[in-house]
Amino acid sequence: MSNHLFDAMRASAKSGESIFIETIDGQRWTYADALRLSGQIASAIDVLGVRPGDRVAVQVDKSPQALMLYLACVRCGAIYLPLNTAYTLAELDYFIGDAEPRLVIVSSKSRTDVERIAHGYGAIVETLDADGAGSLMQLARDEPADFLDAARAPDDLAAILYTSGTTGRSKGAMLTHDNLLSNAMALRECWRVTAADRLIHALPIFHTHGLFVATNVTLIAGASMFLLPKFEPEEILSLMPRATLMMGVPTFYVR
Image 1 (tube, rainbow, N blue to C red):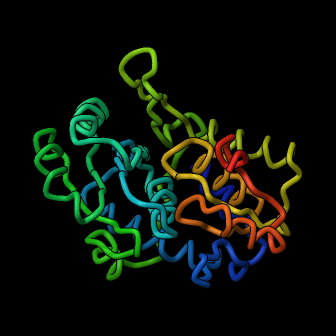
Image 2: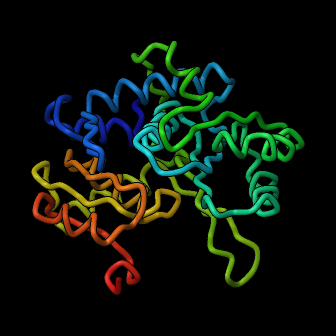
């Protein structure tokens, strides 16, 4: 059995040396880099005891390494649970208690406080910072890159995304490998995204649009992106001559 979602992502890059991510400081990540680092992180997650079907809760700043962590979870069969970086400790207590993750990944500055919560639910905590540092990356550094992807069928869960909670307590929406893949493929076709496109990615990656739409469509098309840590109008305007796509929300366009 194949890994339903990641196999499609892997097949979409025509060349491993094609650019996947470019950052505002000029760093470039190829698809080969993404395969290598996501394999190392997947190996580290496996060493930590995460098995296919286990949940991995992630509350970290946006970075290339954070996207590699998402890919690593897909590869090792873990269920990825993105959490808003603005959530308070009380809110994290609810989400961790409700989702029961095996592993929680947060920034280094939050580790001590989050550990008090996570350990009470039997979860372990590692760190990943905006600059790519943290205990998870230290573990991954010594792990092999040739990770054997876990077998995942179309109906296996790939992610849990919590609702906004406007009408009650937030609820975890369960998303399968085929939910994410079919959505990305449909949008790629509708928007006619190809490997020649370059996206300005200024959305947060703890929301469905920034992660499961913008990122997955880029991957499925074998396209590339400018990965911005946050929305900055001047930065976006300066990148527009070199880009073909931008995805945003109404507040982006108003500003």
